[in-house]
Image (cartoon, rainbow, N blue to C red; front, top):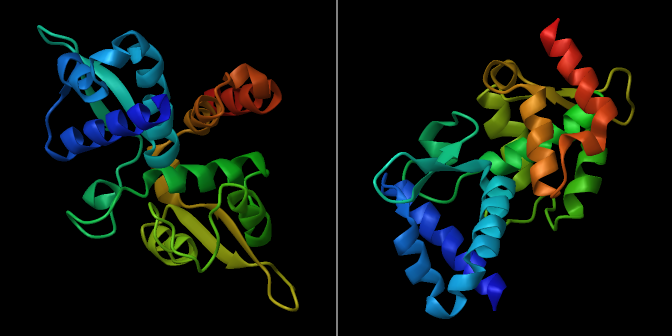
Length: 207
């Protein structure tokens, strides 16, 4: 039942985000009902993780007279991450996932390897996802057009094979440290759990 309350709280936070208003703790407690009031910290934490994973949104406390929270998107995608203004759900989390895969693959990942990982999350090429829509089209057209991804044929490949790299807009808007923090959060660990990659990235960004 807690899982249902997590999803109810997630949709409450998203609704208020679209309405451009903060979510008060009082409102959130009403959503999960009094019966689960003692479980609020766990429900809130799990909802925050899911928002990070699916939508790349961070829950931040607002300075106000009562405990309130806003959602902050990690990227500046048009239409708050939606393909069409006012329609559908944000695709930001999917983009962050792909950028993460590219990074941990050495800054360049084959299309085949990306799908191997995404399939473990029940995301398949050509199959519409309930949140992200048709994922391959997002990757090869929408995100490429916005210059968050580069999609190119592997040199001398026959039959043709393709690979993805970060695009200039991704480099402009988000550091690789932030991507690792995103990975750590959705896996409920810390960047130190992937220390070799994390500290190498930190050193490169400081130079």
